[in-house]
Image (cartoon, rainbow, N blue to C red; front, side):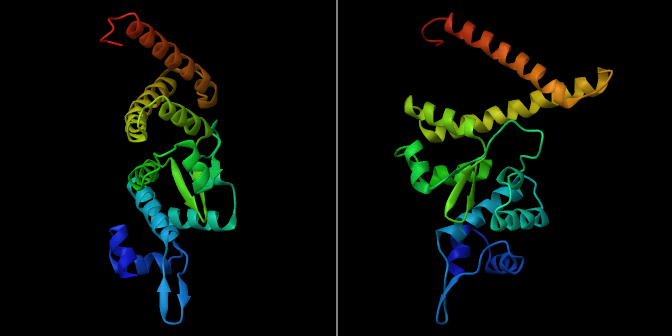
Length: 209
């Protein structure tokens, strides 16, 4: 327990509290020895990432229950309706195949912190099939996964700001506010503006490209 707590960057007291709340599974016992493994460490890192994203321990306890019961993973990861994203279950080997040579402990930890990945027993769950496939394509183009993840973090900040902008406009001016009707309109605006921004970059000097 002491070794697991040190590796996870928490205190033994916190680890015991997580065990009492059912947030991590009991260790494997051999006589009086309790063995923890990489699954326990990954779950602790997931808990830490969720806490940093503003989730409460009660909410995380519900998440743990969902993971154990096999209920809908989209719900477990916070992808409540409405959503267009489809979570993907992967074995560690399948994830490694997507990002050959790039699935390092540092990149895995970063993806957990961002909420792109969650650990469910022996499987890994990616929050979005689209993001998974695009990320893999970018890595195949030669962009390091660490750079892809950092770019994703920065893009998320801008995406949150754009969502706030559209929802503020909807609340202030729409005659019959309907967030679901707003979604395709907002996406079309963002897609068109990004497309024109790419056009301007491609029309610039070779250095700009």
